[in-house]
Image (cartoon, rainbow, N blue to C red; front, side, top):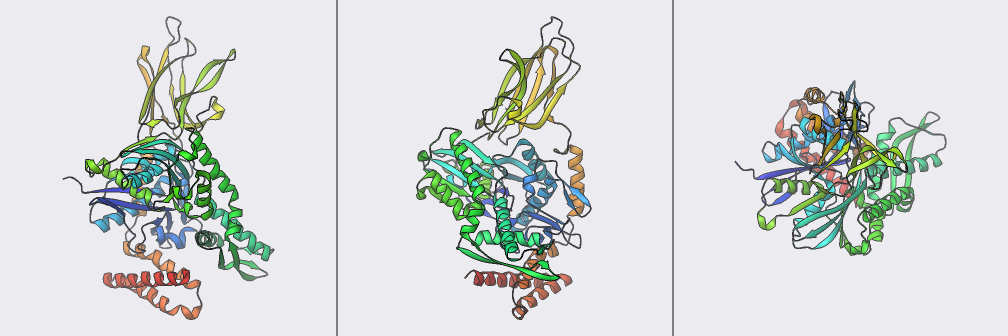
Length: 583
């Protein structure tokens, strides 16, 4: 039976969403409790030992040893995350987020979801991409394609503008990464020309700048006060809120109860922060952003005047100073278009899944090309300046259209050489010539027990290299004369999960993902209500407190209809309250 739907997931640093393409349109699947299309990319374990994901995890995520934020930045690294007494890999935490999204969509659509397209930052290296594929497997998903986030956003725009012929820039500034991708769109063909970004620059860094600003203002008014150990999580949430509010207004009053102590007395943080102060605090981050734009344009010698449109994607693009920077760098303000900053990537991923599954008719389809955002190559010995020395030999240059493959032939150094080591390196500039100018990817192979060449001439070595549409590398080195070959892969290390590691992780996650779905579902909503109550006068808490107690009682008695009724009342109450605060 042919599928009538296609699924795309945007697994983000700060937030994530799952989108479905069905009946010729793409739309996000909202969280059943918060009714929001996106969920926070956070995971925690409650006091009862239950795994909490998204909004449900907020009250525990900043408790030491119980929660984790922004795990996407750890993907493809050897770092682990400790939750209670166990260590988890980044891909395991990501798998929990993916599983939550999967179950939410399955419940909403009444289907079983397996095949999905998953988005990744354009500048994600091979290790992080492989970790993302592993996370999908652990979540019970089959990843049919990894699509670069800016390309997905461009696809969301392109499907609705098939007759447009222009040069586009996708300025994708999310919670953890900045990607700038330049495309040409002609007659339904989206042709990616180049991509450049910074995998360590995102909304998280802007939050930290706001946190530093708030602490500095507080300490100036309260010298010597000792900030509470438990204040960090509250400060981060307050900083995130202040950042968002200052995108709409010129100043914001921030209050955090019991923030610090002095002379055995608690002190609240109460400071006024202005848009101008925030812009001064983020000036270094804005300069890094300018540099990324310059490098993206210089990669293909493109002038800003040739760009017809800039598509803004990612939550960080809501910051007025960031938008103004984009306008200044590319010219006219009319060029800059918001394409649904929070949802464009997820929508584009679902559209690509629909293309892959043949759900588009020929008249409304698009053709998509993409590029490798960085170069890859190996280390060889070359004769330079009258001497032999190690040099970097590129196999693929940055911004080469993918999929791509090549084959090159080298020779061993000596006829009696017994061992060959091949390592793969990453070049972010396209100008690297020496090993100290590139990054070791950790992908390597070793060939041993090579017999001496009988004719005294060093054996030729054939190198076959391919870079597929998912950004995954394959490299094979062969000595044809001996019919001896070796395929490069990650050496065993904490960076990469072996098959046994994946099996062990699947067992751990199965144990961790307990039942009691209703309690898990509504715990985040109750926590949100209790945080809201803490910030209002006691005499105003009674109506909200009654609804919370009603929901808790229904959960305790497992009364399904009463749970739904009280949950809906609580969602509506908080929605109305937040609207009144904003007004």
